[in-house]
Image 1 (spheres, one colour):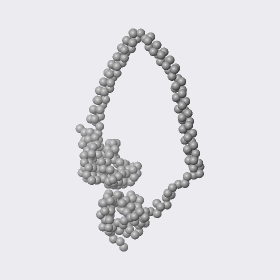
Image 2: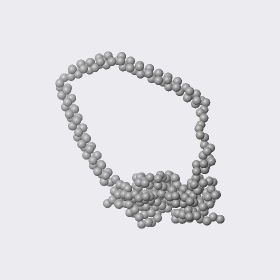
Image 3: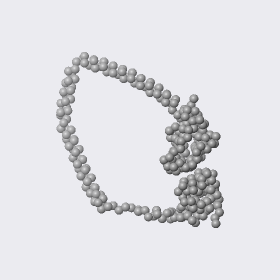
Image 4: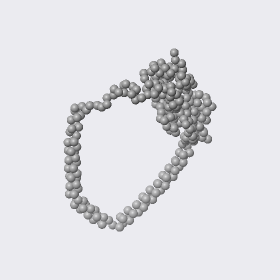
Length: 302
């Protein structure tokens, strides 16, 4: 009979605090229930190997919002260490290299000859182009002299008319550019005034705080790229959603009449947060810190 170890007790308390049963955790982590029980009881002898013990504990921690590295350091006397020779046997069965088919080997042997042939053809084409250009130079000189003779034939009145037309065209272009610049400046001013602003105002450990302003609506959408656990509260601490969001699903909540939204994310690298369809960029790298607490303070536009 096994009793809860200090590590097992810590994990179980975190699980129950999330309101998760062993069946829920099994669905979330894809780890069999008997192994989850073994982790909580410290019965590591039932595991397939030491490598799986650490891997299962890491998945358990991420699912209940604990930092696995911190847990391994704190309870390193309880968690068995793992060495490279204890990796799963299946990894050693992967083929180290693939043989080249006989047909492909013939192509490889022919490749140098093909490259030499292409190079010879390319040189021949280059020589032909150079010779053709050289032979056509006299014709070009004759055409140039003909054009010069035509230019001499222009009278002064034609030149004056051409200059007047050019001045009128330039004046029209300048007026058009001034009108376009004024319109662009006005559009930029309107966009700057009406476009919402979502900015980071503080970051501390796993916590990050954002400010949302220049908008009179606040619609929050949390989408899943895996199976993250998510908890969403308002500024008064009222729980509006809690649970696992399945892959390609999303959870949407209207916070327009709220002053604050608090999102607790179990696997940030599998979770995208949108504010009024604008994607929130994590100020803390989700691949480095899996569990994050994101707070969005909303100041409604007048």
